[in-house]
Structures are given as structure tokens and as C-alpha cells.
Image (tube, rainbow, N blue to C red; front, side, top):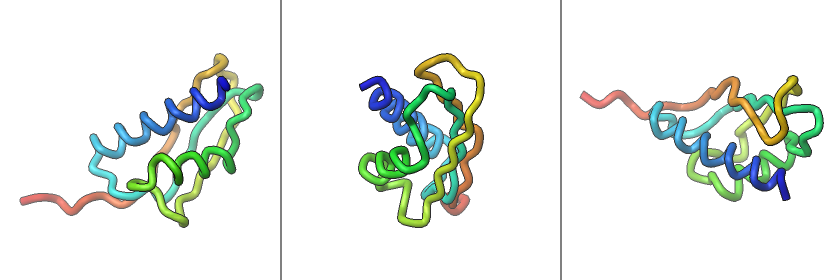
Length: 88
């Protein structure tokens, strides 16, 4: 249950980051979690594909790094993606 909450928080925060940085699609995202988290590359990818289909596609790469973090905390370390064209 707790990991669903963390997956939801990651999903929501990624949407906000992409919106504020005008990222259309995520090519690669790197997320740090603690060693006790059940969040992994597979379940995060599946969650994002289901709930963030507007900013992900089948080529989106998800990488998880393990760090010394408090429980239920994740850090978005890097987002690589395709940006909207600059408006003139």
C-alpha cells in the first residue's frame, strides 16, 4: 500500500516537472529510493505508462538508484525528454 502512495507521488511530481519545464515526452527518468522500497524499474514504468500516458511512451526508460533516504521518499535525479518548440 505504501508503495502505491509513493508511486502516485512520483507520478504527480513528474507531471508537474514536465509541465513546468515544457517537456512533451520523457525519454529517460532516474529516481532514487531507499533500499527498503518496493518501487523498482518495472513497477514504476508500468505505473507511469498507465497514469502518465501523455508524457511517456514505450521507449521511456526508467532507472532506479538506491540511496540512503527516509522511508516513503524519492528523489527525481534526472529527467531527459523532448521539449515543446520555443514559442515566438
